[in-house]
Length: 161
Image (cartoon, rainbow, N blue to C red; front, side):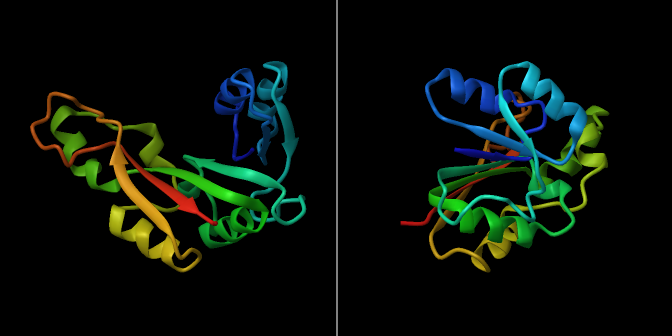
């Protein structure tokens, strides 16, 4: 499994502990150093130019990455190239942003991204690179809100088989 944009390696670490062979890559040296200290196999590498052979990994993870990169399409193309079976993606759900203000919440995660995604925007982007994928909302951020449509994240599962 390849974890593109692994940061401090939280997901890679858990997956490795569960028995998965996982490699994390990131361009940020500081968090990657933390990942290595936590026992994660981490490499300094850009998700827009992944240094592995075609179809090298059964699964590629892009967890909270696409909103931070200059060219999400290049990252998706590289993920498709090195993935054998599946790609798992999460991004913050832009549709939630207007509702945060009513609670005086400003999330740092929404302040720095290069790109924002609604469900339709993510589907449009993915359709340029993949034939079969699913996008849904998950992870209720404020469980006390009445609307079932308010979910913090969008999740995409792409099947390459």
